[in-house]
Image 1 (cartoon, rainbow, N blue to C red):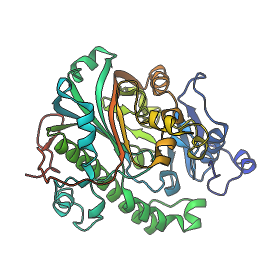
Image 2: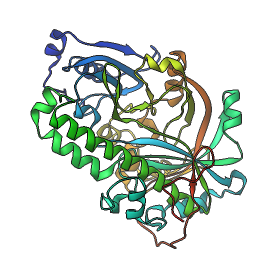
Image 3: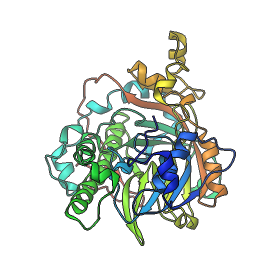
Image 4: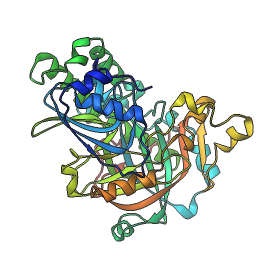
Length: 407
């Protein structure tokens, strides 16, 4: 964990004049030394002029996660293979009082087998080729990806009381571009020059990568929408989009291109989710004007405290401990048939999302609106039979029908 990036060693990164680094976290937030070293290496990459680092900062393979980087050159390794990965929050019309967690968990086990959309039709509706990884659409993937049924635990600000109803249920979906993004990244990562020097945005290679990147971002957004459609179908509910916020992508702006690696790409006024773990609170925030100084980025989640290998010695050491990881303090359940993944994604692997939000608020970047408790978290299950129920359409924040939904 924590490989050095761009061929830079710690000594060379200190010798090269580095870009300005803005630390958007407080002394109360623990940041691993390896992540700070990677941060300095990123600041020394060719073309980089500014870097913002957020409270969820932690080491990654090609650089730290939890950063926004402004550069005059493109650096595909900073985005990684899951191009377009993001968090989408949805509101269900299923009231909390009718929820039976055991029954909901049983139904949600079937979401990836739920036949509620035609892949070619869905892709075409998003102006994507109808044969673009159709079999992976509506699937979550591995690692830290999930679909989670949530309820409001607390409204923190008065605005949260009007936006989030304690009597309703919500879905938080975390997923990305699946195999599509991996292929696009693999084609680029084989070229050492693209990693050491970056890409000229106006070159043929730069233009090609940006086009492929944009397709991955659109595919990932559609994927999250279809996951929510499947979840709503098994729960026999209508569903409405509240927020769709990617955190692995590049955005063009004055001065170059902002690379978001694990940092939510936002604008003032946006509503954005900040995920905790499956046994801790998540949060919903409103983005404030000061995010202009943080390159339009905020944290997307709590961030890892311990890497995956380390977690095998910290959690789930016996059967009773592993069984305990499948429940949380609100009576919530985890659906995950991969024992290793249960251990690697235990709540203790993550930082405190509440402290992350407090840091962002103290930096003037966000206003905390609500805290959300996890009730059922889907990560991985053996497929169950599909009853081929058709879901009701997804609607946007104004109640208009989402163009990705089927009749």
